[in-house]
Image (cartoon, rainbow, N blue to C red):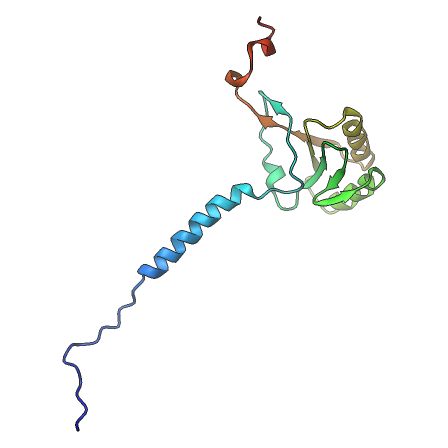
Length: 149
């Protein structure tokens, strides 16, 4: 019995369609997940009409202090006490050029807790404190917000 070769020539082209499909799926997944990634603890920020964008708050090495609605304090993702804020912030900004501390405060947090955190951050030698807020549109506000009845 003789070995018989097929008469159809063999092509060595690479089929990239499956590779493109996989890459598109990964791209879509990363596009959906990236905005959901936050630094620090998730809090419901106070809403304001005139806000300023804080691009430095999205950096990986940003120093973020959060105050939750129940008064818990967080430095980054770590829960800390009020006594640990000053020392923690001093260590966090020691080697940084940008010595801004970003404070995220829940809209239902007590004012005394927020004032205490700001004082503790100032005690750490920080002059630039940025309070993060959530931007809302003027059209979403009720007329009573403008003093109109």
